[in-house]
Length: 82
Image (spheres, rainbow, N blue to C red):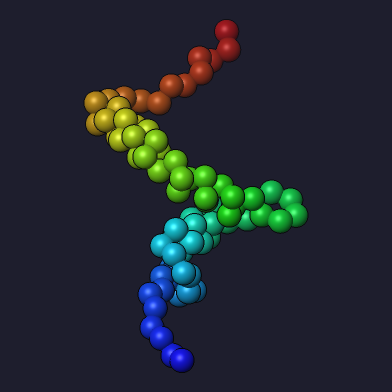
C-alpha cells in the first residue's frame, strides 16, 4: 500500500531520510576529497556536525577577536636579515 513520508535534500538535490544525512552530504561536498583512497570527508563532516556547538563557540570567539582588533593593523612581517 502506498504511503507518504518526509524527505530531506542536500544542495545537489539528493534525497536523504534525515536532516543529519543531508547536512553531512553538503559538508562533505564543501570539504571535497580528503586523503588517499576513500575520502575522509564524510567522516570529518559527521564529526563537524556532531561537534557543532563547540565549533559555533569557536567561530563566535574568533569573530569577537576580529571585531576587537584594529582593521588597520598590518600583518606581521619578518625583519630583514642583518
